[in-house]
Length: 173
Image (cartoon, rainbow, N blue to C red):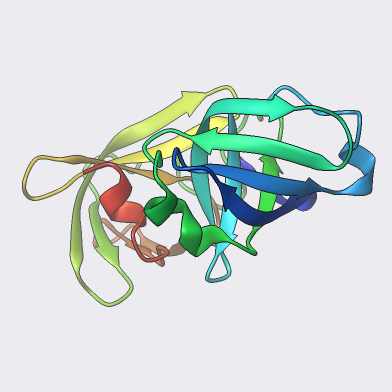
């Protein structure tokens, strides 16, 4: 999925019930015109974090209810109250501008120099470009292929430095 900070769907107002469902106040252009969505980005700490939708319910007006895969409790979703929700854009058929597509084998580091793992490839699905990183413990971490998350790509030393929002690496573990 490709993040576009110009397509604001709405803002999370509150958590509803005990299953992690959130109420999203829709932007005016989306009232009565909800697009089909498999995923969205929630902006947390100024960074876009991808979330896959496990359920949605629109009953009219300016409120949409959403549930996210892996976030089926009040405790997990409360921290996102007040966060903006952005749509993913349509597919792109080229490598994101300025990025090298042959990064398999690169060492993946967080900007604080913590080792994330080794890049094992890029997943190029329609609208869902992800960098697959295998952690030292053998776990797969999926990182959105987005310029705001990639600080530097050093082709000489075969390293990539990421600026990931807190908890993004833990989502896949």
